[in-house]
Structures are given as C-alpha cells and as structure tokens.
Length: 104
Length: 154
Image 1 (cartoon, rainbow over the protein chains, first blue to last red):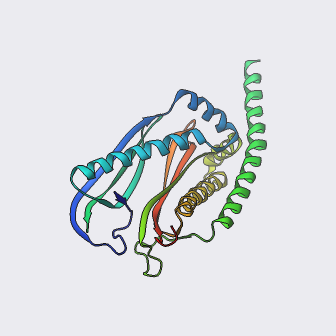
Image 2 (cartoon, rainbow over the protein chains, first blue to last red):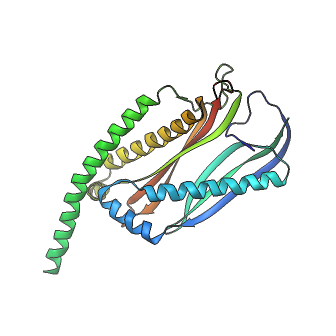
Image 3 (cartoon, each protein chain N blue to C red):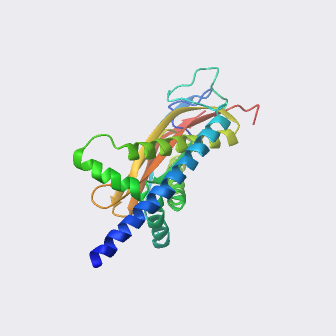
C-alpha cells in the first residue's frame, strides 16, 4: 500500500478512483503519564509520553484506513490529511482520511 | 497562615518554572539549530507537485510530531498579559519550538529513507490539555509530507 499526501505518484498513472477512505481512533491519557506530564508542566519542555501516545494512535488510525482501502481493492491512498481534535477533557481523536486509488 | 503557604507554593513553582524553563528552552534551541544544520541537505517544500528533477522514483508518507509544554512561570506571565491583551511572547516561542522540532523529525525520517526532498508539507497544531482558566497547557504540532526517494540511492 502506497501512502502519499500529494495527488499524484511521480511516474505512475491512476487507473481507478475508489473514493474516500478514513480511519480514526479516540484515546484517553494514561494516569501515570498524566502525573508525569503535570510535573513536566511546571518545568516546560517536551512531554515525551504524550508524543509517543499520539504517534501510536496515529499509526493505528493509518492502519484502519489502510485496511479499509485494501478491502475495496485499492493499492494506494493519495491526498492523505490528518486531523486532531480534543473530544473531551483528557481525550483526543486522531483522524486520517484520503482517496483510495488503483495504480497501474 | 494557610494563604501564606499557598503564596509560598506559587512562588516556589514560579522560581522553579523560571529557572528550569529558561534552561530547557535554551537547551532545546541549541538542539534545534544543531539538527537543522545537520539535516540542511533535505529540502522541504509546501508545494503540491514536485518539479520533474526532484521527483523521485519512489515516494512515501513521512510524519513528525511533538507535544510540548510551556513552563509555570511563562504560563503565569501569559495569564497576566491576557488581562491587558497584546503579544504573548511566551507562547510564541513555544509554538516556534514545536514547529521547528516537528519539521526536524519529518526531515530525520526522510533522511533515514535516503530521500532528498519532502513535498506538500502540512503543519497542524492542536491544543492537548487546557490549563486553569483558558490558558494553554500543552500543544501538539504535527508535520507531514511526501518524501521523494531515489530508487538508485536506496
């Protein structure tokens, strides 16, 4: 599965458009990490625990999108966009979407 | 007596935040500048379509993200500043550091794949946790784009 956030793949032609595919995940913060983060909030700097958590969640969202694309017979997803929104206090939704296509 | 303890706690947090926050920010900026120089050979563009001479025979999605927090002292100053309005210098440097760090991570990922350029770079900022009132606790900056990889070099 080829992933790209531009509309074309250099040197390859799109044979068929299969429409929008999407993947999302909602994650809450871990209590232990939350405690560490609140300590870190006094000193400032990178909250590594949260960075990792969001990276993991994002790859899960991509995984779900890829599965959806595979199910409809695509071999690439173009024009991918990410979005993050906080749903509730302490929970964030990571959403990813793109166009499923068949490349020759 | 109780209010005195409260004032002491806040003062301690302010001093800790000021000291460690300044140190952490300087250290982070040194790291950012060093990394930017190290990865200067990777070109990053916001353009959607790569010109033919930069288009690799292979492409892949690259992402970089960072969650970064402002220290207690700067948050306190920002809260005071919000009373009169105007430029919030402490949050400006926070977002600047976050963006540059996210772009560095994109470049690092591209460098690991032997790519020479990243196209259609998008940046997105989301506030992860809110502090007291409506002050920002920490922000997540995500950068992503498509890396152009040469088949020959990989």
